[in-house]
Image 1 (spheres, rainbow, N blue to C red):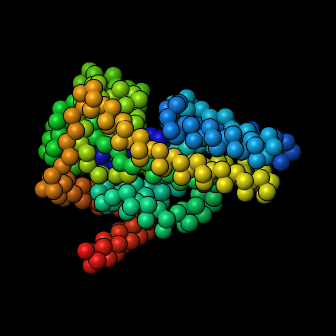
Image 2: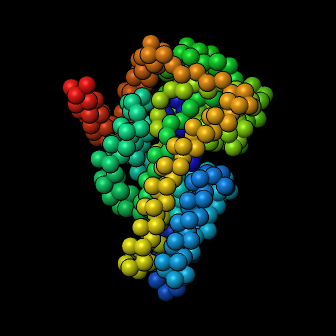
Image 3: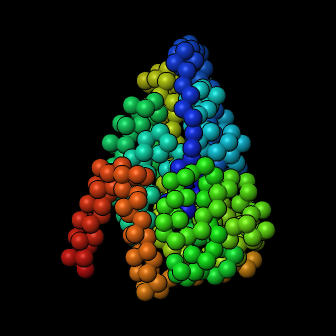
Amino acid sequence: MKPAHLPRPQFLRFILIASLGLSSLQSVALAAGPAKIRLGTLVPKGSSYYRQLQNMGEAWKKSSGGAVTLTIYPDGSMGGEAEMVRRIRQGQLQAGLLTSTGLSLIEPGVSGLQNMPMMFRDLADADYVGEKLRPTLEKRMEEKGFKILFWGNAGWVRFFTRTAVTTPDDMKKLKFWVWAGEPEQFKLMNDLGLKPVSLETNDILPGLKTGLIDAVPMPPFVALAAQVDTAAPYMLQLNYAPLVGAAVISKQVWDGISDETRVELLKAAATAGAAINLASRNEAEESVATMVKRGLKVHKPTAAEENTWREFVEKSYPGIRGKIVPEDVFDEVKKLLEARHAEKAEKS
């Protein structure tokens, strides 16, 4: 899945292009014959994500008697997440494995599962909030033409930097990567005193090597695959934001598949989602260990440093509530977590 970054994962700018005529023809075609599902994703070929998607595709083909087939396009070969959302709407793709970045282009409320920095103290917090909000979010997604196949929580995004970083003041000295074409994120970072630099993902590694940027946030398995640690040999192990995503399929396509087949497809998707969650969290630890062996230096913040980071990111909340995360979702997440933390404090 695609990386997030300070102070939130980037929302990609996109142009909404929908063809009702094409969608109708697409649905009729699926009802009349085999369903050929083309799924786009940014995950690397050969990763645990990719292998589980392959397993899901094999299960789909078997349970449908060959009527449903899945072709996977990894490594961003179908473009960034905004482009993949556009392709699904146009019928060039039928499905995607997206992070909250891409999902938020469809339904902004999904951003509440990830884009509230340091609101989640551990992954159990993220799982808890996800379970509470997903029914509402899934309904909203369907109203906008997308069916959720499964959700995923792949662990924490980490900060990889060219020089050591322990505090926000250290980060303020660095040129920090932000997704190209995201003015809201750029402004928010500027307001926090950071130095954002807008680049496409393909320019991250060259940018780190040339000094165009000094810091980038991403999950460790992506950093390992892209060899980001060779240019940014420092990692800040801060629980800043979880990496949340989901596999989606066009509802027009989904509705063109028989009810009986859909039941089996969802079973296989749930199995794949559970396997991805388990494998990806283990893979994150393994990726860090591998990078440490080749020179990566990891800093885990002290309690005092963590408090400094928390005070720093909380300044971004007014710029997030109602602008990045819808007010109702922001307030609900905050309410759920405050109650959860208070209950845990009483028991301890």
